[in-house]
Image (tube, rainbow, N blue to C red; front, top):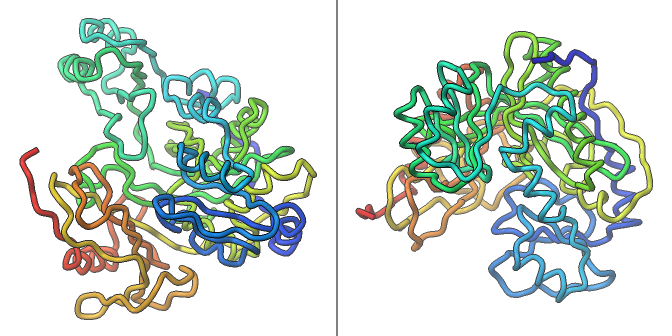
Length: 425
């Protein structure tokens, strides 16, 4: 595997210049989603409003809006048509191809970035397990469905042929990547593909499969933003360069908008594990960090990517990243949600108290947090479903993945607001 050592750093569009471009090209931005979680902190954007995906259309005035969100599903497409809006989302086929786990080795080879050794199996059959295991020739492996998503249920740790047989039996007829298991520190780096370049954002530690938060080995459990100085210089440089290179390959394919890479830091370099061709959970933290650095947040860059081909210069982000962190709490059990923390700002006291609506993360004082529910009271969930996201303006975890004492206190306090009636399904 080739180690990338080219020196490159995070860069963005200065806020004043970005706001001027938005006023010129994108006067009205509509965030179409279940909540404002992934676009949190972007109130500074002119004409930004939230359109709940399950609510009646809010009235639009003036120029037709630009609409974007987590996924461009049928509801978003229909809303865009009804409101004559510009759909600022990459084409479904481009997104599917970039996010297909079985396509990663070929895409990474084009970008000249390192990935774990892997074998690809189409329409798998459990009878192929022994041959696949011998072909990979690794002591441990990670099996992934082509379409695996954030819940991590399509990712399995495999330590022998018997486990692979059971996995392929469950996934019979589907496309699977079997990759060598690589040990390292999980990282995420984010970017935005523009018409003329790639904006590379900061790096975060990623929590994966934490047993306090999820029952799933490969599930995303949270992020901890970190300054570049927290990593060896070669690892930071390799992370940024991998993001830029893969972003350029995506740009040449016609892809535009936000994306992210899941990686492992291994010694002096990185290996790329996944491409996430969409807004990431960590974008919510990055919005606050980019605004603190005087830069336009990523959702606004995506809006510009679809409304102007005018080249604009990016500037280095010199300020160290704030130590913002977030945790994703999963249900752990099947059942019906009866109570759940409401969206808002909370204060940690004897327990925790909701003191108002969600405020900018960077403005929160000590012992305050934001909570974003991912489920709804009265609905059924499985143990692998996320319940809520907790965000605090201080670290939630250290590089080993251990939760900080403050994070543990918050999780314990929020249990008071969370109830699930268990079922046997």
